[in-house]
Structure formats: structure tokens, C-alpha cells
Length: 309
Image (cartoon, rainbow, N blue to C red; front, top):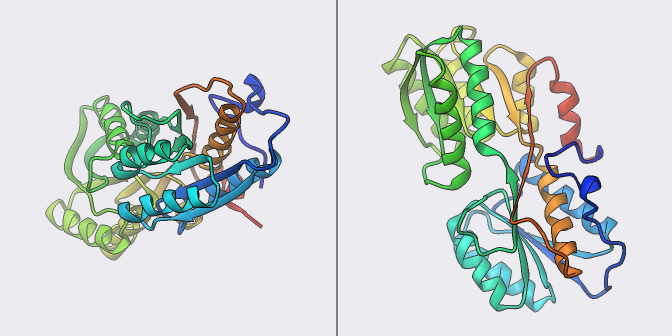
């Protein structure tokens, strides 16, 4: 895996890493799933940083089950975990999970869901408004600055989705010729996104673009456009990288851009902040990493960040 790429908050710049760790300390990391390369990159970043700092590392996935999330936290406590990375975008983990972890004596850094009212010691995530803005800006330019577009978001109003959508509208508002004709949330479901895309195209045969807040449904959007034989006529852009979505970008026929969040950094920074807490050192409440707009011109280079061999 390549070295941690440049972020707005770099480990080297502020000397976050501590040199010694007590052997008994264990870091636990809970994610809402580990099925896609975005989540796997976060896990890899956390694992590698924990190993570098000589911590024992335990991970688990709740598979998007809020009840299971709390069970995992309790299980971590039984296994001696006292430092926790809570990597989930669900409200249950963001509030109840942190409270439970604190009651069990854990220090908590949340990851991938920055919330203003979080009770965690610190939070790591991307600048989702900026990510949405630059993704939408690229789509607008891809379709000539005018035309009908549709927005795909999460079905539930969770912070990453809402912030990316804010960024979408911020960019689209700079183009008087852009009209948002549909906004829906098929969720992490490629088939639902494909069917929604088909219905949106049928209702708006002159539509020019689609934008998604994440990669799984973005794949469905690409398939929906292809099935409608609108390749080259309708373009799409998404936030969040994955190996699968990069392959679509390499084709360059429908997908024209991906705003990559570089989630490897999330995991590495979350563990680094826990290390500071473990040594009674202060941590910032919010750490936001930068991302990058990926096009066909730089997709191969960015695909290397998802190579875990």
C-alpha cells in the first residue's frame, strides 16, 4: 500500500505519533460493513498504523445492523479493548455507541461520519461538502454547463449524504442552466439505483446527467444509462472510490469523474488520534482529510491506493 497521501491534517506535520505503547493496550475497530474497497481501505489504514504503533488490533463489522453494533462494542470490552474506532454512518453508533463505549471505559474516535453533537473524543472524516461540490462541478462541466440532472443520495438523512448533497446544490447553483429534476435515495443497492435511473430517464428523456453520493448505487446508475442506450448522451459522476467504479471510469463512456475520499487515511488518522489519547495528549475534535477528483487521466494512479496485495 502506498504511503498515506497528503491530507489537510498530516501525521508528520503535527507529530501525532507517540513512540512507546503499553503492551496491554488493544484497539478495536467497528465498521458498518467491510464488503467494499472503500471500507477495506479504511481497515487497512487502521491496521497498518496500529501495527506501526505496536497495538493489538481487533476489527468487526455490524453489516449495517444498529443492534449488532452495540453488541460488538460490548464484546470488544470483554476482550480488553480500551481504545475504539467507531467507523459507522448510522445514528445508533454515532450516539448510543459512543455512550456505551464510554460507560465501558473506552476512549472513542469516530470515523466517516462527522456530527456536530458527537460525544466522541474526536472524529475523522472527509470534507463531504467540498467533495460534493467538486463532483457536481465536474458533472456540470461534462454536460456543457446546462441541462437536466438527477441526484442520488442515502434514503436516511445521515451527515455524509446530506453534506455531499449540499455540495451538489452549491455547485449547480453556479450554473443557471442546470435543473435538478429528481432527487432520490435507493441506498446501497445497485439494482434499485439502476431501476430508479431507468424511471428517471423515461420521465425525463432529455436528461443530461446523474450524480451519486456513493459508489455502489453509482454502478447502478451507469447500468441504467447503458440499458437505456444513452451512452455518450448522459454522463454521471460519483463521490467515493472503489475498484469497480474506477473500472467504469477507465471506460470513459458514461462515468466521467469520481471524487475519491482516500479512506485509507481515515483509518490511519483514527488510530493515530487514539494513540495520542492513550498518552494523555490532546486531540482535535474534528479532522477532515482532503480528496481528489479522479478522471480517466489519473484513474490508474489512484487505483493503486486500492491495491491491498
